Image (cartoon, rainbow, N blue to C red; front, side, top):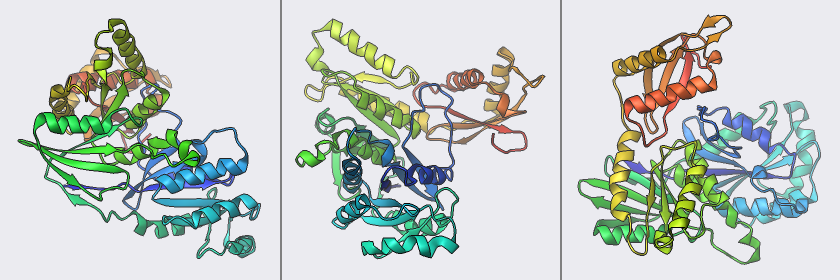
Length: 444
């Protein structure tokens, strides 16, 4: 087994140069799963993408920076963010509008980075107009320009072919088979590193650090017979003066990289500060990427004598995760060691469910019983029929359900079947996903 890096590709550029259009075109190439659970899917400005079996995380920076600021400063913040966090940068310019002062400023900034930058001239729809529209941009003095139409697809395959070598995972590290990969996520100063140190110290484990697996996290390989764990500590954003103070809220990008490498996400909440919007974003992202989730309320010792505050905090957490009630919630303290002994048994239970496989015969019995208890609705004058089901994969458990017309399966009935699978299979701690297909096999 190998621990691998997940390349993060950031789209930057002025408003209306086509970042979101390119984002949508590239993400359509992924094998997307739609989770029918209300409230789980959020407005996404990133996606896990696979191109020619090369996975990477794509981020549309235009969607995550909503500050009221001048356009130049707005784009500067996006560029600083991309330079700080991304591995590869797609810098988009508008071929129809031509070169602008904002473009020139950002190109000057990008010259100072050692990241791979693709300078892309968008809105070039055909080779006939390419030379005319791209010529002004050679004034930038960059080595290569990429002509592209995000809207029509011209030049996209050529661009992605050039990207592929930069998606190779050159820093893979061998891990023992069946290693449980656990990422500690949360806002800066919530106690991620302290929690890992407390775990290592209290459990008296055999520990070895793995250097160089990723620029943004510290990996610790822990042996606790007979199991092995990879603990991924995502470092908080480093403050470097006023310029990067505004990047504090973008620590989520580090979390995205860690999510691409883990099975189980441990999201730490500060008991004293309570759950914040940033916390709920991290929790939502874990489900967008289909990861198992355990919530750790850290610094519980600070409110151990305040029963009212305890109940208030637990209620806040319950409200934040009401659409993902399967996630275990543990009360812990890195300082005193409270609750840490419960953590590894819980990780083990979650990991087993996350990777569990089921016989097809048992799944079909479960589906038949669920349909018999609650008949599916009518659609276009006919009652929907469900023919059979099979498991497509694990991590998280994924099942195909073959029906007469998937378009007619209402959200409420999808949720009903998902809950039947969860309860019938004992998957009470992990996300469960159902993919509805036509009898012919084509997805709907």
